[in-house]
Length: 410
Image (cartoon, rainbow, N blue to C red; front, side):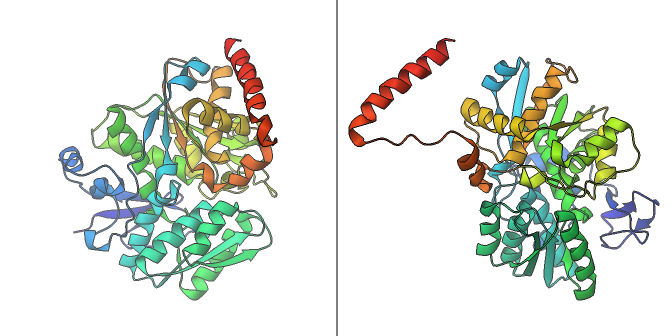
């Protein structure tokens, strides 16, 4: 029995096979055929995580599942930042709690499982870091050969070290992520490698489970979901998850989807701001938030559809605003995220200031990756360590106590 079909977002062609792209070159969506009516009771009988939602994931047999226990990440109620921003209710979905420290694990467990069903012997991706770490881990788990194409000097050490230790074959090339992805698409076809970038529709199906979990954890649908945007697969996937919850009558509403990009890598924000129906790529994207340093996101059409269909918004933030948000989340809530993750908090601040969202809205920010993914940023851009002689420690502490007490009073 066929569980799903694929539909092209460009020409609407329908496919019953497991291809990655349409014959016209367009991206594909996964459409489910007659899922069981008792979805909720089935899901509630399993532990929270990606595979709780098996009925709406494109894997035909549980025997093919390759898992590291991904999903089930904590949804933090952030009372201090809520008060700081003057919000009624704020939550942060911390995807840094996944096995390799980012949301990519949700997609990769499904993508690698599909590679197994497809009979693949080797997988490949282009990456700014998190995808490479996740692909390498899941390929190792599945016993598949793994190839990673990286833009030279553009990947944070924390992410690169993961891909190395998992045994990936890493190839560094001159140029941007977009150039690396172009290379991947060419060599994958030539050498029969299974692509696991977000052009792969099956990988995005894993990422949509963020929406399912938010609903399960809150017991309702939030008013607003704020998502950092790089290659634009995640905001598209999360939106699809909420659409499916409504489609199968598990919920009655869909949140406003808001995408946040860094100012130096904001082609989707530019298109949204100018009301364009096409994307104008940024040739040399630049931002401290390496995970979203992408100038030509392949999922831009899906992302803009998510934003427009949900009456959402797209906004850009500066590197300075990202760094400030990263410190704010860590120091007020004890949550350490990488710069790209902090873009959602930085974006929320601007959205409130510009009155784009209401302070009474129940808001969820997606934190996409752990802070240890990019520790060099902290060392370079935050306060230096105080170095003194041992006999001066007490004196320094006394001075710092006075400073901190004075700051607290004001």
